[in-house]
Image (cartoon, rainbow, N blue to C red; front, side, top):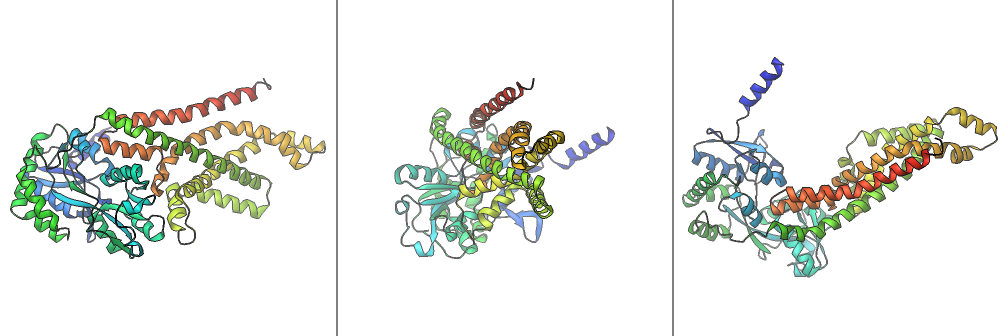
Length: 490
């Protein structure tokens, strides 16, 4: 007990609490990469980027020492509100929802939403109107994603949501996408990294701004940060930082003038947020469609898993030495590696050989993964049937096929049913992992919903309710079947 207390004391002393007068905790996502925030190549324990330097200037103006806190980009809003850090940054976009739910600073950088296409299509696809009915990728939960959702209604564009800003541009080159709509900073970085791309910088789709966010009640600190940001605009510090990171452009001069003219309480972006009830009604159809994708994917993947699992289990019970060894190796390899890795290999790793559609890759990935677990259930169930019954059936002259059909199979199925049901419920929830290969299922759509209204409460409740609606009937059906099959033996 003393050791535990000592450890907790050391932990509390080592990690300064949010609001410490000496330290300014600021949260960001180092996975976002340069020029926002990334691990320093020379010292991975440190982060570098223009947002890192802006945060350092804010801390300096407050007389504090900046300390970085790693957080997933999609969780910055919720983390700053719950007090994990004082300020959230790292390419945080200025949206009405954020201004309604958090204490948002004045904008400190202006970006444009730009279209990137293949070099060969630069004259063919120059605007959203040119991309009617085409697949356009972007990051989920961003202004660009909202723009594409609107374009879906009017132009039939198919928005494809990604969790990162690397694979969308790779998918343009591979032919999975026709274009990507994202911030000009991200597009510039992608063009340096990936050959064969062209970005229409001269034809921006929209203009946006980056801001820092604080907890809703932290308005006093927000106002001090606003004054510091304005001072750094006036003395040229922000321009120096932006030029260093090669993100200064002609937009910033006019933007700085407008930002300095506006008061902190009246930022340049004066859009108002929609009431949460209106947002729920707006996103509910998308959630229902995503729930439909989840249940369809889960049912098909489970059917595939059951089919392959029966084959594997049968082979391991009845097969020869070589077949048993190969099937055992498959089961151990699949169970011993993460399903995320398997999905990435199927969708991206095999793209040079075969370009599987995202839904098909998700179906195959989940099906093959769960087949390994199902096979163990069926193998154990088959081996649980008393050997005396099997020998008696063979003595009566039944063939092995008849023994399996009339004796072993039915009993094994009854034994396997409860764990099969559990596996299906687990698969239903694991289907949320397929969002990494651009399938927008229920959890991913909920995440996008939460990011756009600035709260997880309502989206989380709706998502949980939909999952319960999907899983509870299956559990009741399984229990009913168990009771029916158990009755004759009682």
